Length: 143
Image (tube, rainbow, N blue to C red; front, top):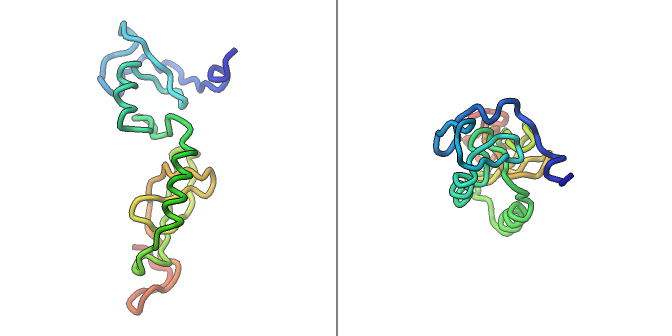
């Protein structure tokens, strides 16, 4: 049995839905279908087109592949960049689509790293000010 089959997440009746890319009903479609790591499905042709510009499931937003090498590159880039003064001390509450957990991360205009699984596949829920950054700011105010 292949490793991929052992890790397959079964979603009951997943083929009894429309392809999230082309909207064709997959159960009666004659096009080949692929199962994504998250358990959702789409046509193979649609998957090939979709992954040319996207790396997350169009239904649940989980990463479609091992993104660790890409995330390491983001770590390097962030390590060599300087946070603008107006963003220093600010934090965001984030939700990670990969591990489905919430955490906090320093404010950045693009990237917020999950403290649980180290993914950057995250969404900002709210901004939290954790330290006083200038004369007009107040500690602990949500914006």
